[in-house]
Length: 260
Ligand SMILES: Nc1ncnc2c1ncn2[C@@H]1O[C@H](COP(=O)(O)OP(=O)(O)OP(=O)(O)O)[C@@H](O)[C@H]1O
Image (spheres, helix red, strand yellow):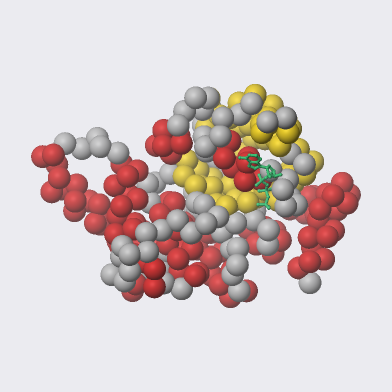
């Protein structure tokens, strides 16, 4: 836990009665969830349970069929993803989302520039440029890619590219970070490396991640939600979720076995 939880504090994220249908099929079937500021929260569940859809509802990529999403108390209804992003929520994608021909530095700088919008005037360009460069170098330091600064991003190893993607996600200074399967396709050592990185870059921030690797989930999350067929069947601390018979039956028994 990054910050003390208080029952009276406005949650970083609050989902109420959230539903989403595609055609006649209801994929998200009434989700209620509060995630406190500073919490590291993992969403787990079987393939096709609706985890990516839930992500897309939170980030404004999909409009809910009904229900609300609140970010720090503000209802996000009708907002475009970029507006939600500028309110302090930033997400990564499952598919690597970097510009391979641009340098590592330029990738981060570009994302900083984008997140700041166009609120600076032309006359501020020089100082803005210095600020951006310093900001991008700070991010590179945080994600341990300073030594790779001037290489085209496309030549980085897979794990380094995922680290860069995390850098791009946090670059705008968002305080709610959403990561979609950050360790997918990684070896054990690459996974350990990315987990440490996530821990470092989410200090004093709220994290929501979808992740299939139960070692990562149980090692990192303060609380876990289990999504099955579009419904959250349990939310709680890792030890409580692990011991929950409903979760064991619906998902965790099989998922934990698959780990071994
Ligand atoms: N845009 C869409 N149109 C129609 N159906 C969709 C759309 N997006 C997702 N679905 C369906 O919704 C269901 C849930 O998909 P989703 O990708 O959210 O699951 P998931 O839990 O993220 O799965 P995985 O762990 O495999 O990534 C699937 O049956 C999928 O086919």
